[in-house]
Amino acid sequence: MKTIDVMVVDDSAVVRKVVGAVLESAPGIRLLHAVADPLLAIERMKQAWPDVILLDVEMPRMDGITFLRKIMAERPTPVVICSTLTEKGAETTMAALAAGAVSIITKPKLGLKDFLSESADELIAAVRAAISSS
Image 1 (cartoon, rainbow, N blue to C red):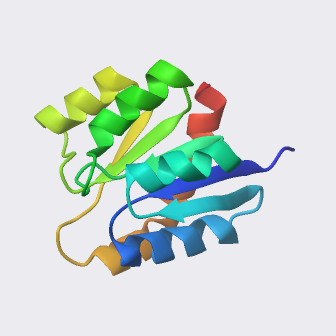
Image 2 (cartoon, rainbow, N blue to C red):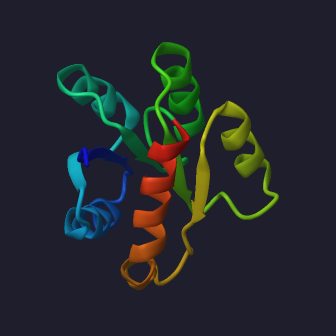
């Protein structure tokens, strides 16, 4: 089984750390990069392209939806959106799915670290499902 290389793009250092640890604990998944914004992601992707991208929406310098559209136009890659803005039926959720996201995980506004730890199975399943959808 091929290892799934994942990039995490989120401006929260806590999210990058916790999600990175969750992903690295999963057999067959490797954290390729964890960066704070899409512009850093673009630079890292020149070195090594991920199999799946776990992407926040609200970030400095470039928002996640704009970055998602850019990826899909240049080199379509499975993207899982992980954001506080993507509640079921929300406009941002619809925009992310329309732009090419394969799935959405809604982060809570409070208790983020505990949520991410408790949602480890959901995060891992979303990454595995994303790669099988490509």
